[in-house]
Length: 200
Image 1 (tube, rainbow, N blue to C red):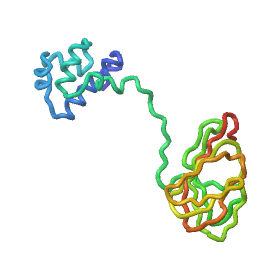
Image 2: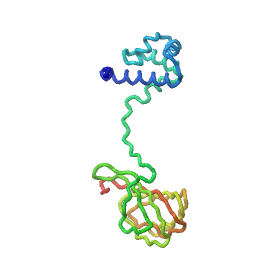
Image 3: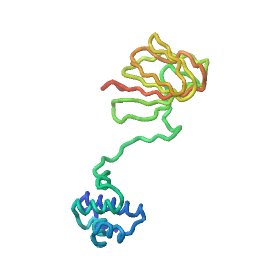
């Protein structure tokens, strides 16, 4: 049954539920907290149920009775709702990159909303040591972090031997790509960061 709590001011509803949650988490009764805070049980019950508003002094005493700071009571008030993307292991969308062949997979780990992309994170796996790779060029910056295996990676005139835990960050408009797969399987996290307006 609807109780009509939605008509209460949001801050009072938030404080009431936060105080109740903290009290229950600490295994305290209304009587115990009320006594410690020097207020009546009825008053504390009304605060928890958003049936009354109260001053900072009383809230401070309640916070002390609960063993937390006054700021803790307000910590999550008015925090924007989250909008994170969660991709379980192995659930990234497999994509085919131009020029890649067998033994070389890209799993896209996040999907930008809207027509423009600001970044793309990939989990890339190389299995076939004999595979030949094209060079890549695209706008923006690329960040590579090696998770498994050993790879020789080219950027422009330079090559780098990358082991697990190594990272490489570079301008992606300079030709780049794997030069040699030294120890397979190789797994790396690759993040493309596009300049504003260039992601397509």
